[in-house]
Image (cartoon, rainbow, N blue to C red; front, side, top):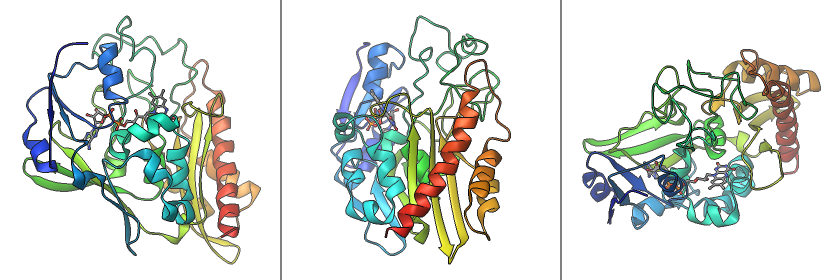
Length: 330
Ligand SMILES: Cc1cc2nc3c(=O)[nH]c(=O)nc-3n(C[C@H](O)[C@H](O)[C@H](O)COP(=O)(O)OP(=O)(O)OC[C@H]3O[C@@H](n4cnc5c(N)ncnc54)[C@H](O)[C@@H]3O)c2cc1C
């Protein structure tokens, strides 16, 4: 690992002011240090934000929104009683990620900006347009089983690996960001970029912008929600496909539907078209499947990942029924 300067910040403002070119914020370090040890990231300096009390504050008691400080630990948020009761999809998206040890270290802010798990990106022995623009990509036409079928870039098909951002997207979350010129609010849906011809640019934050909080507007659809994650083994694995689904009903009729999918796209993926198909009628096998098919209508299979399309459709359909059943039991 290359030598780097390490500083700690006592406040969010101090953290932002400490940024010089080549600096990264350090939260739990479970992704950043990992990539530094692999030689994929080589920051000149890191600013440790884990001792900033204001970033750890979480408040799920308000009537209008849930607030998660970016420095809150994944394990703690996953066990928040309000989330478990009223927003099971949010709690599950954290509880089903990584391992208990990692969740105890990792923060909900760092989780959003974790980088792809593409093996070529993580190996400096291989070319990678995301790691080093212009060097090429060995995945296309090659071993692409775990790769994206939605939101493909001109050169990059690496999947966005996180679970929490997928669930947050379904709930219209926003993030508060502090930079040298003040605070701004970014809808979660605008945080991650499509790879296009610049796959090395993964998000829309400047280097000196610190995520301070994640805010989720309250909705009664939270109670009938689920995060369904399909993977090669039942724990400690990233999603092959996943779906966050939330529903509200008036009698049998769906009045509100929220669906986002993970494991299949280059960024967290939401489909308003699919949601609209469900509203106004009862949830049936046919409408649930139609919603899944709508999400994957534009999917482009590679050589080995075509199975993700049918698996993704079924994941969405199953998640909708899980969500509906969860709502009935409350
Ligand atoms: C073996 C393994 C399995 C995993 N499985 C899963 C999984 O199934 N699902 C899943 O979702 N995740 C999974 N993860 C990823 C894990 O959840 C992330 O590594 C973790 O959430 C990152 O959080 P952190 O606090 O450690 O971030 P860090 O590693 O400290 O930071 C990550 C990135 O975010 C930036 N950053 C951190 N905080 C801020 C902030 N407040 N503002 C701006 N930038 C910031 C850092 O500069 C860095 O670029 C896995 C990780 C490992 C190692």
